[in-house]
Image (cartoon, rainbow, N blue to C red; front, side, top):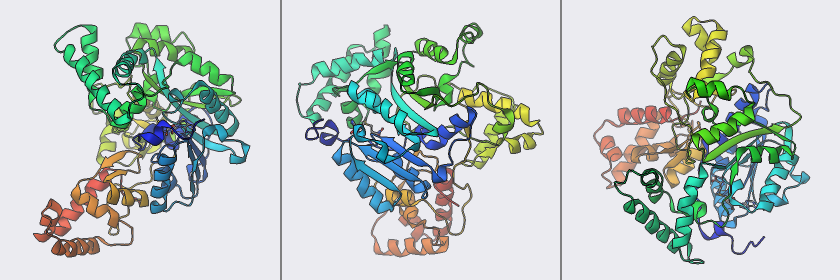
Length: 493
Ligand SMILES: C[S@@+](CC[C@H](N)C(=O)[O-])C[C@H]1O[C@@H](n2cnc3c(N)ncnc32)[C@H](O)[C@@H]1O
């Protein structure tokens, strides 16, 4: 491997939290498959191709007794991650500038292994190494997350990839190639303006989105030397030859047949789970998957036991910062307010971002637990609700000495884009950026107001936070801001 001219050292790839790759979601998939996956607080967690570490850093911060390891071949990305890690203060996170091909038994076994956005973008030999690592390093009760571009849907994106590669000067500077790619995409959109052909719609729906995407994403997804998309059935059979079994998608609604026409549902119900998934990829032209695997020797149940499910918690699904395209996003169908799912959604919206245990939901509804479980499982499969074994560590209320994670406090100071306790990106406004770094859990709201007032006396700034502070309404402005931060999932107990 040539470490000298590595594309990810030449041009940054945007990092950030990947909601569905969080071990909490993998744990839920394992639990619903019939066993109790390792507790998150003390788990060993590995990320292959972790880039800048911005997915792992909030996880390591959330679980200080977990052992978290990330590896990436990009020196530049790992340097960025280590610097951030030092500022956050995370002795439990080890970011290694190593190829994943170097992972051996000395690294130990891991309860959760994440590999997001890597498999499709590396040479075949490294793809095989990813399967080897999953097979050798996954603990007996562990879960692995693997995302990859999927066929047949990716054929559609391939048109854009081939076009921008054709138009960009081979061997040119990354920055120039990105500019040329945008030029080509705009040309394709413009040439098809107003046309009601299949290609016209593709240009409007897909290529115009790409015109606005991040430079790093465009470069590494569309201009990258390697970009393989897989048929699900081939991927699963290859992974099976490494002793791993497919459990399902980390984003459960992408497996749902519930909202398909009943004749299609009946046909799909006649084939096994993996065949059904392959049919769904053809029917929905899926472009991307986030698949979860366990060791083949694990026994797995087809239907979860209602008593076990009753102890899980329901939460609202991702608010959607996960950048990978979704092939199966489904809309909530209208329902009466007496419907258990509608009741759950209303309750969760009222206590957002907290979650609610299913047995407690059943009690509030006056329903037998079994009935509540059936409704909640249906909602989970449709993507209306998420299910968790271990709920998020956050609070909806504001205490007198509020606390945000050390990761969010550092991110607020540096970029203003922070990772919430739900593992979602949140962009802070100017007032929030000034408050979050002060949320140590030891400083009172009164003291925070006093600090802001002192600061605004020294500053000539005319931003809204300063003006509010000066006008003597500091305390209510700060309290409102804290409530907003709580709803964004940024406050801890
Ligand atoms: C598309 S980026 C994804 C980064 C990160 N997982 C994310 O989703 O933000 C692919 C990453 O794989 C890394 N990579 C490629 N080959 C690798 C190898 N052999 N070992 C470790 N990392 C590798 C690259 O450096 C890059 O950071």
